[in-house]
Image (cartoon, rainbow, N blue to C red; front, top):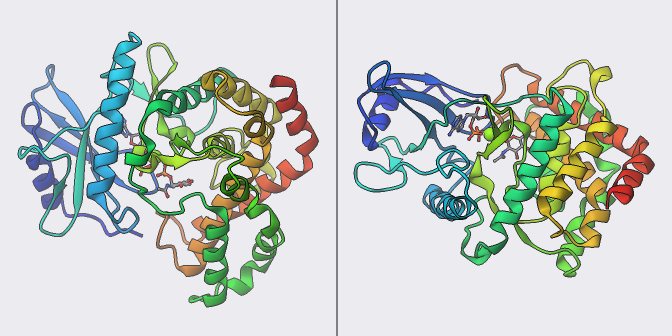
Length: 370
Ligand code: ADP
Ligand code: GN1
Ligand code: MG
């Protein structure tokens, strides 16, 4: 678990950035698992301006400079494309606020790395799908995000976390965690470990096809959780894709799969009552339809055929990441209770098992919609 940051350190970071008005309130914000996020309010009531300040997790993102270069370039590209399409570049994409020295991040004397985005006003995030319409919107938003970036020069992007969705590499890390078992937790979670080990053959299905050139490498978001979309409070429509730390070359199936994992689950990622966990086939259908629309004909027949596999593998991969983190002592994902990562792993495996049961229906939906 990350240590709380001293107020003085946070305030010092705020003052490094070129903001409109003096900061008068800074408070923790949001439910992300990775970065430390704060809402900063500047100026006087009535004419206040808000910002999102984040301390980047640089044990996870080891090269914050490269990471911020990606985000600054990608958001500049998106702003231009959104303007050309007649959209609102100030609300439909993030934009990087510079420091007083003109840098796109600030490094303090404790080796913390900070960045600031404008707070997009009048928006909300969903932790859970509340209705099918919202999820359809998420799907078109993630699909068109991928399409908007289709012309982005992928070779200029830094790989912010090497092998991020390389499921065989994630599997090896998981096996190492089981072998090391530094806290002696493995024995009590043998059933979960066995579940994961039994599916080793699935782990390399997508990477094999990528290596053979049968699946195209695209610029993808790679972290398409539901709460990485801001919705417009006035229109209730998906407005802006956030959390761009992992925008890198990847597979379209990663973005599809991760969104199904979070949005088409009948329960929460950390639900302890596993009877509440399962795949909502109707939401799976809704998202598939919206994603295909957002991608606007850019997916190949093989990508479309493999959408169910994308959903299953992203869920499985997240499960082994949570379980590995539980075994090694919860060093990666923020936790709020001792068994939090184990609870998360269990929901993911329950969801995988349910997808396996509903496989024919998932395939039928994809065939029907394609
Ligand atoms: P993490 O990587 O830790 O998930 P995020 O970048 O997703 O961090 O931010 C955490 C939360 O902060 C989001 O889920 C969202 O609620 C909120 N948030 C982030 N950026 C903005 C923004 N520019 N405007 C409004 N809310 C934001
Ligand atoms: C993390 O940053 P956040 O909370 O949106 C993680 C994802 C996981 C997710 C599980 C950089 O996402 O890969 O799927 O938690 N992000 C990173 O909830 O590791
Ligand atoms: Mg996030």
